[in-house]
Amino acid sequence: MKLCVPSWQLPGSWLYNAEKLVDLPWIEGIELLFFSFDDETRKLFAAEREALASLAERFSFSLHLPDPLRPADLDLVEMTKSFVDSYVFHPRGIDSSSLGYGEERDWAALVREMRAAYGRERFAMEYTGEKAFEKSLELLPDLSLCADTGCLLRDGKQPLDWIRSHAGSLREIHLHAARGNKDHFALGPDDAWLPDLAKAAGESGWRIVLETFSLEESRASYDELRRWLP
Image 1 (cartoon, rainbow, N blue to C red):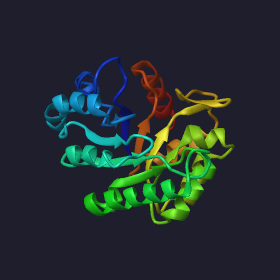
Image 2: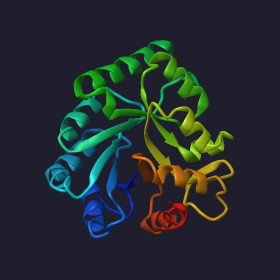
Image 3: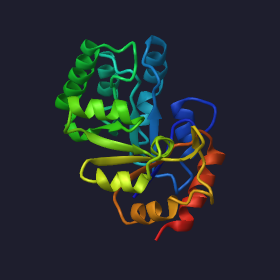
Image 4: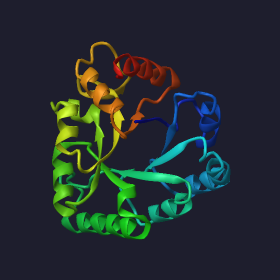
């Protein structure tokens, strides 16, 4: 198991967060978050790229690609390919009224292009909802996968059951709690599904991202997860 957190733990940039996390030995990796890759984001990231790359011996980096994927995101992969181990992206299914069939095909073509250019095993599609996920798997049935426990719980699924049923394709787990119809909560003692998942994770080589967006919440998740590790 490799334990990671998102790049937003404290207010500040990717590099600011990474430098603040260096001295926390329980954090083994960082998920670099990108919600867009417009001109402004490109400039901000370009200014930090080399310094982030220099931390690759301390941290295992993954990168969350923007949603929706666009051809310009290939530039983001090119800029990070030397120090980012893996990339996660969202499905593009038919659950959006603005998404037409042609756009779905464009999404699939872009994913194929990324995988062909940079390595198919480096890219994993995240479960963010059943309908879009299943439709996207119809388009690209051989994808590597990322489990998101909050989304699974909101859809009434037991995370470990889903993870086991997709074990051959699983590359990453985004681990956080759901409360009602909202997710990205810190793990807590009420999460009865966690002990069995923690035991399985502790015996695995899974990449686990504690996907909460403050250091306080990520510490709380870590403390709760640690209670159940074998």
